[in-house]
Image (cartoon, rainbow, N blue to C red; front, side, top):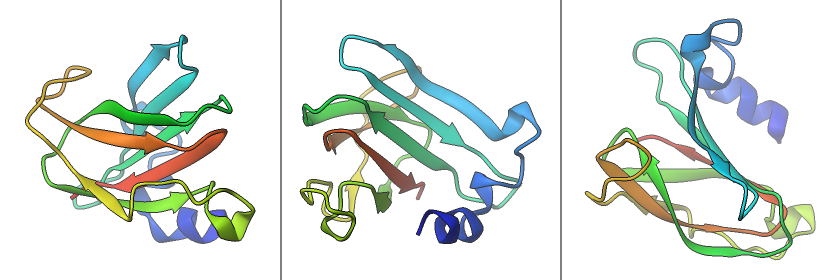
Amino acid sequence: DLNKLYRAYPALHRLDTSEEGFRWIDCSDHANSVLCYLRKGQEGDKDIMICLNFTPVPRDNYRVGVPDGGYWKEIFNSDATEYGGSGLGNAGGVNSEYIKQHGFDNSVSLTLPPLAAVVFEAP
């Protein structure tokens, strides 16, 4: 499934060798052991947001800044039941709110499953 995801979303691979293809959202939340970043493609490619929770503790209402307002579709969740996980997630996606966070004007409130990666496609 990860290989299919990688092939299906150009932002995950088009600019692999360029710094323009990557942007940290937050790499400093060591207290919660969470990392969030964007993968960016070329003009016309939708950004992909990846959030990683490295603890066995679920993070509810975890606020993450996003560059675009609208609906962020959850396209992968490693805690899905088909992978042996608990199925905790974001019900397919989340709407952004005009709440400033991480240097962005918009943000989303996420459920981060334990020991998991969640991946979202920009609006």
